[in-house]
Image 1 (spheres, rainbow, N blue to C red):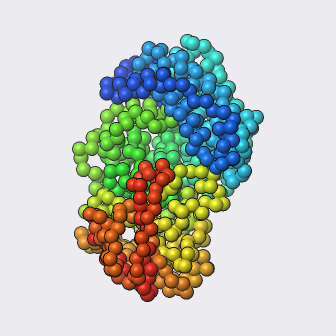
Image 2: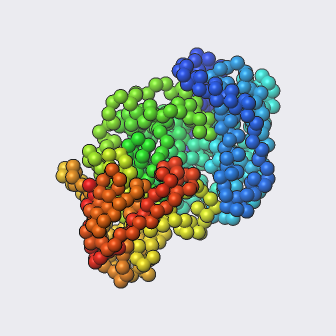
Image 3: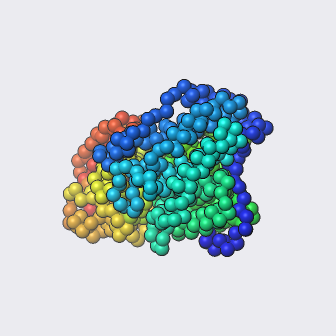
Length: 598
């Protein structure tokens, strides 16, 4: 789709300025005073802080122990500090923050590698090398993010930096040429796309940042054309793995690194070749990709989550609003604006992409949250590309995940149910722990949060679902009516032969204004035990489960119910869940188990 436009590129591809340069004081003076005060305060606090030291041993820790968070804390702290200082200078415009900005630029320019230790490999699944080889740079997500950060600083502060020394900009340009542009144009990295190989968020995310880098700097036309042609091929490779329905198989968290970065890439291309890329905003598939996040929203910070996504997601920013405007989705623009208005962080202090933060400050006011959510964002929807069913009424928000266990960032969760009542979690998808080396290794499914036994699914004498594209749902039927929404699917194909399973039919119904019903019927050689995950302490009687003050599950066809208490210690899980969550284990008394949830 995108590659076809390569032959239409103009001879001269323009510059891209991320919103407004520092000397445009009129534009920067439009930032509301309360936000200006926040930005300046954070920049002043950063002035007083020491830059983190990153030693070779910090880099090596990942291959030695599998821990990636300690190095990444040092790495991202540097970049956030530099962000803070640059935003302070853009807001204030008095050169107060420039000396420390220069320190930060040179500190990052002198790092041996911009790629994370967890990504320090030359093949997609290759061995992670303990130290970066600066003669063969790896272009990963955060090498590209780092280049985009430095290029954006140069674009916005070039005159101010050149007033100190032209060597500052020259150094940034040299480092980016060596670390990003030369390897990008000179070799093939897996995320660039080749043939039918499956791509993921990396493709759009890195392509956006390489485009941002090359057009923020004063690069030559030969380089610009070469980068655009390669990026268009990558964006085609990225888009091919999305169904027409636009669902992100990697989960709602990765929407912002996938579909939203596609928006960023197209925004840059539209800016440097005006009139050429606007046609893509009208593509139904891209509009569907844009609207996905609104359909996944439950209430407050809660979203339907699966794969490596948390149930609690940060508020929307200007980016989602701009995507909604670009594709002509009033629903998404209204949802994003209302969600953005609930954010207590109007300057995105946790973000390391400077362009996103500049957009947030300069996009201007978006409509407030005074209006109720757009009705289209509260509707039922089925995403056939990933087998995701969503239904709602005034009380319940229900999701059932079909699909298969070979999707990006997969958890073995075919057929799992997620349920909210009055915006509160009832049956949960636990999500994912803090990433380690194990998360993306052959031992991934040893991690409990990845296993079907810790989703709302059955287990057969300890036999759980298996990973891989061949393990999936079949015979899926969906209906949405005024009185009822219903999905029926056979999930037996998600289990390996040792489960001795001939069929397992799950029928989940939302009887609007009444209750939710789950009816499981199976035929197999081993006894079945159904897991139910909740974050509320359950009270159990023979045919009933009560979840605090939230509601009850009436049980028909189960033996004695057992409760496992799980202490949640991982920081990433604790961002969504309390200190304890619970797994209920319901053994089948026969071949049919019925749950009525009120």
